[in-house]
Image (cartoon, rainbow, N blue to C red; front, side):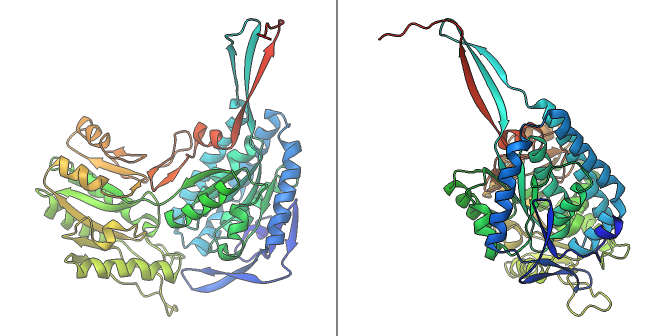
Length: 494
């Protein structure tokens, strides 16, 4: 099995109805962002492949939904065992495919294990209700049942755990799944799950994986008539299109979209702690995190000191190939690199000061490096390109404010509302600021990148609709069924 999970394994097959279907058409190259070399190929699925996946899922779900809670729980626990057994191989795969450092790989594995552990509890938590009736002799029973077929469209930045947080609870709740991973990360976000579930007793057809270009099969996946839920993680622009396609089919959209998260630092904050959080929150995984710090909002009295410390810390970070011991690896592709560096240039042209970074880091043997320098920009305003856009890179625009009211106004001056963080003189002051920030999640005395499977994960505004983790996502993939029992004859008016 380890050889089947390695980057050099043969991944050129779709997974439909428990079978590996070799590509008979186009294939897609999978590139290592560090070396820019192709290390694998996956199939470019067609619409007929997509139809076959949904047909398989619908047929399998009709039986899977009737399995006892203990059976579904056991399958997820078996998945956890496989995940743990092949941890080293999975981390290596994430380095090759997602450009993730070893630390990123361990974090991704840990988060996925956490999601799986939470999912394993769901079969026993799908409880309904009982209620008395206003009508004599009647009682009400409300059951919670799986919705059917769940479509999962996962992103490239954290492909393992962001696929897992939808796939695992959906299956645990009695649904079948069609998984469409991102084009950049079709293995760790998709085909890997098929190989791990082959180590379990999951019936054929409950999980199906189709790889391919979103431009070719995306619409069919998002709007398939057999789909009952569409769980999507990605940009707001694409998310709007996916949600619209799902709604046309009356499928439930669960959308986790973009963010423009603010890290608020007041005049009496502990600057050392604030900068510690800032460095992690801006530069982990090259800033390619929907809940990373997109804007640093710092009180003018400590602004210069904060910038100086942040610059020192940024310049101490080692950036390079993810195959080496570095803090920052490559970004995912040249499109992302060019867009974030363009934001930096536009921000400087608008009057900001480039304190450090702003370019790429040479990688030996690579002609067109995707490693972006840790970048700090001072003298920024909220309308500058690197601040008003989700830059999704290792970029830290620092914006001054004069009082808390202004800080809250700046933080809320965005269409997004995903995450945020606050450092103030004490936790109570920080809490009062957090309560005024219009965002789905806020972390006081910390930074915005937090995710634990037993607490809700959701955003507001353009950051999405629906929620993940715990009962939030359980509600997305299940529905209630009201059954009334008229135990005594009822009197009718005619």
